[in-house]
Amino acid sequence: MTDPTALAPGSYRSVFRPGLFDGRVAWVTGGGSGIGRCVAHELASLGASVIVSGRTAAKLEAVAAEIAADGGRCDWAAFDIRDEDAVKAEVARLAAEHGRIDALVNNAGGQFPAPLAAISKRGFESVVAANLTGGFLMMREVYARSMQRHGGAIVNMTADFRNGMPGMAHSGAARAGMANLTLSAAFEWASSGVRVNAVAPGWVASSGMDTYEGAARALIPRLRQHVPLRRLATEAEVSAAIVFLLSPAAAFVTGVTLRIDGGAPLGNAVFPSVDHDRSRPFEGFHRAVVPKVLQP
Image: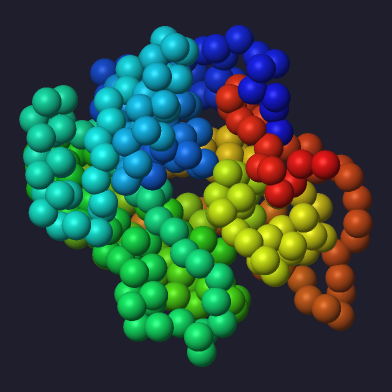
């Protein structure tokens, strides 16, 4: 990924045209780090007034400062999407302050590695709340406060769960639920001019990888061997898919989950993929940083 000092501030290399989101307000949950931070930067670089939210004020302030330094506009709000009262209050406040919310990227979430037999009820419910219930609350409130009247587009975050998620069954269950919730919302809210889609990233070279320890961390450098493209995704590649789904070019796309996984679920042990170095990443994010676990 790109050395964050190699490019001048304000030079996000989006494949989309400048000004694409001029006059639009876009909210990115989990915008203080990782994929969410990248998406917020790209949307701001394309003219959107961005709102980033999450639980840690310092991270959100830092992202807002980065975007401002790059010439963009960014507001922030620190709260927990699992807290219904907080979601109601913050969405109402920011929808009133900005006049409307045109786009929602439901990126916030989190999980921890554990075998299914070792996951407690509390742990299971916490992960489902972070990856499904909280996203539902954000969708519902943004729809009620703005999109029901003004229309808009929502992109939800799921994951590569097509073959199950051994070692993270709680997250797999929540992500599958989010994919189904996307379908229902796409149907119910179409008459309000609201499109609802989802993305399902595979393994992404993002800061979240540095939160894992022990055996899970030791596996990360070897993940590329299980991807037919023989590499991990960049944050910018996930962001580009999200931006497309929010854009006018996707005006007839709703109820879709777009996989961004390098073909990882494909093939089988009888016909293994071939090692190569032919796949070149898209590195549009000028402030991207290689996770420590992937550094030499």
